[in-house]
Length: 265
Image (cartoon, rainbow, N blue to C red; front, side, top):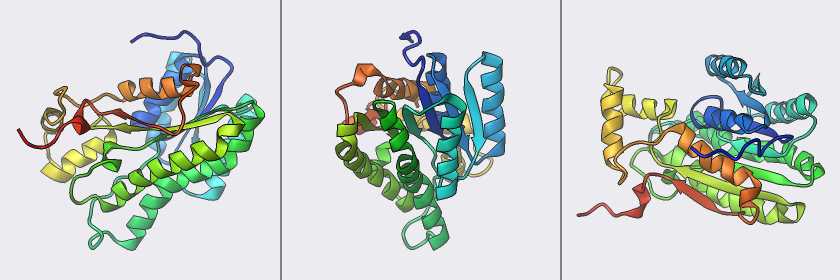
């Protein structure tokens, strides 16, 4: 894919989520010059990303924090600023994906989904926006989902958070435009991530042929395949860059055409 060489040189990014789309975004920004602090709660994913960064000579630090907690989000922002001297970009990709209806989802599962998927966005912004403003402005990108637009059965908590991301993105864009902080969201379709693997095993059982399930998921998309995290990261990089200087308050589909059609014909 085309590169805009070192367009993030001198920029500092905080990325939440160290697997899937978060990992791809951290790598993409660092490849074009950003200094990145990637944050996640999963020790194994954190360690893998650290190894990738070291092997590739990328300026990516990794922090193990619970971003659904106020102290964790504050720690993440402060660590990014202390390590790299400021903050210009936040990419909110951390998420959990429980399955269930409103009658089958336990209250603690519902609360955890809300805290991670939408609460972490609020908290990173709460602690990070002042630092971005000090640098003259910047960009925040929140990762939503096509399921914030239309959804499958049995994912009530997850889709509630993804719809909320669209509304919160618009509110943040309006509230912070005068600080030159642009806020957008990205709504991917089916993308090759640990969350999609969980979906495969949820629908077809623990022993599912994941690749076969991914092919079935991909067939639902007009382009005939699922997406790759790196393809979503390209949209994230665009929205974080000066190429998107007049874009704020929007949601950008990266869904292989999934939401363009209707389920007949």
